Image (tube, rainbow, N blue to C red; front, side, top):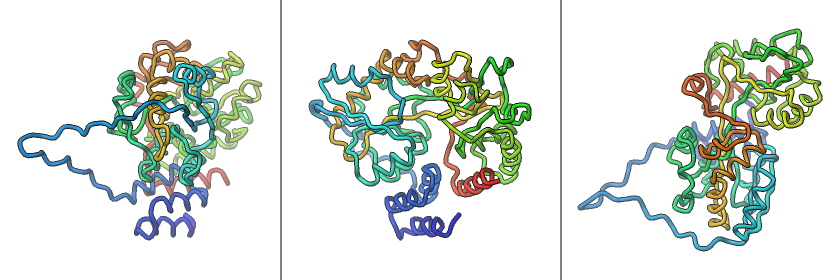
Length: 386
């Protein structure tokens, strides 16, 4: 950890600066959102709040939810690129007479930096799970008014009460997926079933792994039967050995842009998300997806309403709208990812079944690494620079 980062972490831990100042400084130093989330979690010092004391003569019920008034005439959405069906926004605009502006970003860091700066005027954003931790600590999310989202009941139980939003107060699940292996079946007739694929010298120059610390190191931890959230020094040392052994075979560390290389046949196999794999398959049906037998990462992105959103009712109407079965199915049919909406999932052109109880034993959500994040950052630097 650099001296600048150490000083920044010490400042937020001692209260010399507030969390907003910390995030602004951390992003300026190039820290990842995952790292920032871990530091905020470790410095929070928050304790669970006790429920309110019962009022004399009875127990208090939940506070009544606010009335949001009529739907506004505009809505501003900020989300990942290539992450919404082409007809989702036009159909919403037509039905609700509401003009939608859709801007896109390529990283959680970019999104949070913009919200932190107070720019954009967005009504909905689409963070990944660990980014929700940062937004929560910065108090940058509005609480949902659930009575205006009756379709929340369509969300599959597996995607409710997540580690990032255990009380379901701030998030509506958007898409879910798994990080596995995309491969060309015409180049690899035997479907790969293990992360060991990337250790095969016969594939040198024809395979890639993601340029992502958590996914890359996590894969090698799973390869050895360990948790992809491990901070054990011995386990991380073994993961480094495997990562370096694989590195000599890699064409590159690359994430989503590898799709074009898979389509062209320049790459035979790549560590990739299942949705991006399906997008590539739409251009070349020789592309398939496999989840290694050792296990992998599962994730779920969500829509949230950022603090200070101006078009609150329109945001709620959009959240309820995308939870309609036919709308949710249309979105996932376009993105290639699974739908957290259990009714939409049943309507997908290419079904993306929810993980079975047995599969969930090997699939893990990426979680806060706490103080171990700095160790991971150093390990990833060593792997990439070796």
